[in-house]
Image (cartoon, rainbow, N blue to C red; front, top):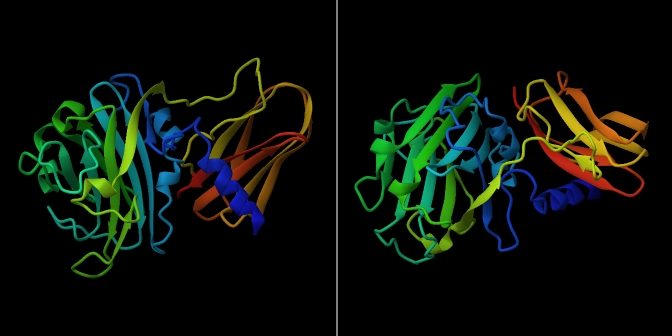
Length: 316
């Protein structure tokens, strides 16, 4: 049982890909080129594949509910993408109490103990809502500047994909913002049964209990392998999430004996993809998960002196 513990520690310290935490404990939101995000909830941009593997996405404490989140920004908007898998889907218009995602924003990360009525917002996105008019929320302007929010939604076989753009000017975003998420799940009832907070002690109207996020000026990285690698590298698989085939890039600075293997969430080895001596250079290995169930998997590249682990998501 030591392997999964080691895997999680390594991932939580990685800052190259996705939404991870910096040395100050701020959630890092990478940047994308202006106009490069299309709000169609189709997961077509490579940038989303780089961030949807974030540790922020792990919501496995509800048995029938699974959520993946990705966060990006450009000069105009703060983008959120979430993929929800749930065996019982229900939402009511303008209702936070059933199946919904709640977004909490404190535009200047003031960390006040009370709502400041300046740049504090709650935005409720009911799963599957087809119009911003079906959303709920509160803020300095009632209910919040919904008229400028853009988003796309698509229904999947087992849930919903939603892509949201919150305008920076409307929400008065500074470089560092207070930020929190709640994932609400209701099963066969008229009220929410389960809720997962990004911050364990979070409260919807107490910004001091929310986390902090920073808008990074660094463009999100979607390709990690190069023609003349300068180091031992394991890139993010693409696409990610995937179904059922994905590409795993890696690079070797020198001729090495390496092993590339896949592990499940409990640390059990699923398959070995590479095991032997490889010359220096860049490689792509394809992984076919046709026989595996949906879920989180880890892939590990090892040599005699180096070891890198990353996370991938199989979503059918």
